[in-house]
Image (cartoon, rainbow, N blue to C red; front, top):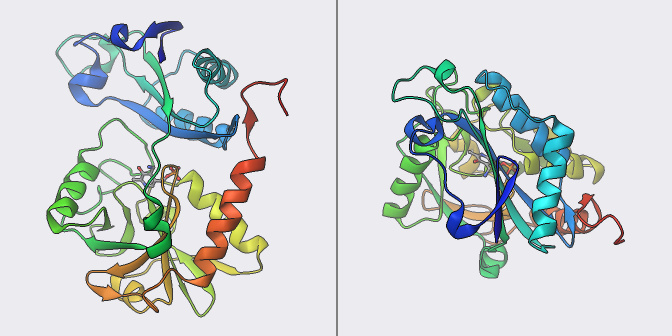
Length: 293
Ligand code: PMP
């Protein structure tokens, strides 16, 4: 695979950056995880907007316009002849000295890595996931906002480690007040009495692109969707629960902290949303190869 670094395409083995890059030294940078389905990049504009919003929040000026960045992403996919792909777009503060000062990093580093997508096993979707709450709280918004998709993912990694120790593939995280926020790499939803509920952005979540697509799909299906604060108790007594994310898409949850959710099987509304989401990925998206249909 060819990797884009600062306007050049490099073979994977040669795709290297400086040890003085503040992305490495301090996790000082932002990123996106994006997918393409059958030759179309899903919600590329939304992902690019979030990347530029994250960069703005950390006062990192990306030296490409959004249009130029879009062209670079599409060109990387074309050079690698990819149709169904995972795209990792990274912008770091760039090369500086060993101090914290971002002003010592004059030029941000831009990296685009594309690869074939590795999918979660199909049985996760058929049987549903078991998740557990971890003691690591989601970052306090006033310290480092979870809305910023920054290169510093230690908060999520520490939660993931706890989850692995507990034998679950994804974990539920609470904010400092104890309200449910999200998972280590996914947003969370529950359904009770046909109302779809997910935490609002202000409780301290990454505003997932998939989350927003699913909210719209649910509304199009005539369901009521509420963005409101809730506790673990609301999840324990839910009829259905599911997670959303670029890699996971829409994935059912059937057990939380050893409590069986609903019937213990992926719920009917969840299954409907999985189907709707999958058909949306097939038709929507920015074409990688403009001549193709
Ligand atoms: N929350 C966190 C913490 C994430 O890292 C992600 C992305 N993997 C999500 C939610 C889901 O966001 P998206 O749907 O945009 O992938």
